[in-house]
Amino acid sequence: MRHSVEVSELDALDARLLLLLSDEPRIGVLECSRRLGVARGTVQARMDRLEQRGVLRGFPPEVDLAAIGYGLTAFAVLEISQGRRAEVAERLAAIDEVCEVHATTGEGDLLVRMVARSNADLQRVIDEVVDVHWVRRTATSIALSTPVPPRIRPLLERVADARA
Image (tube, rainbow, N blue to C red; front, side, top):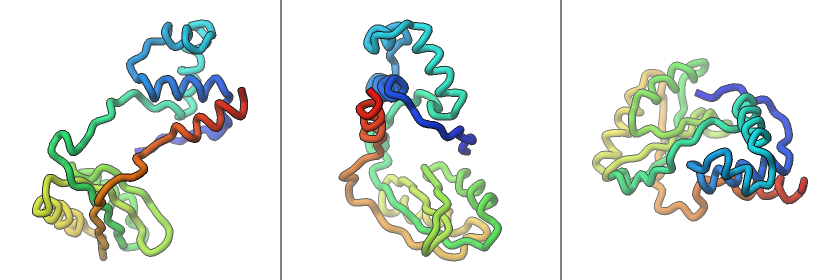
């Protein structure tokens, strides 16, 4: 579930701090302050402010799903009964292999990213998705590769460079 995010601009120090934390999520506040050339209290205050604003939401490890047996990624566009987005999203969240759900415009109502261990396992996951009450139609595509993985670095670098 997303938290509300206060929309405001990052300054160059915020961007540089986020880049550092993205590169080394286990780095300590003291080491951040040393590398950024600012006081430890400044780094801690910035981190606290970024967390309060909803910009910095945690430090989860980056896990390679293929390395833990989920080598197949698929995307499904779902058409659902109008006015039932919250209920459908709640039921989709109960399916372990559903990694993300986005409300969309265009052909469908929801875009679902899911993973599976094999084609047969994907069929099982799709069957679970299709069985969700209020899902009217799905169109599924299997990802063959990920030429551009999820990223934020170019956006943070733009802010860090523009405001430095």
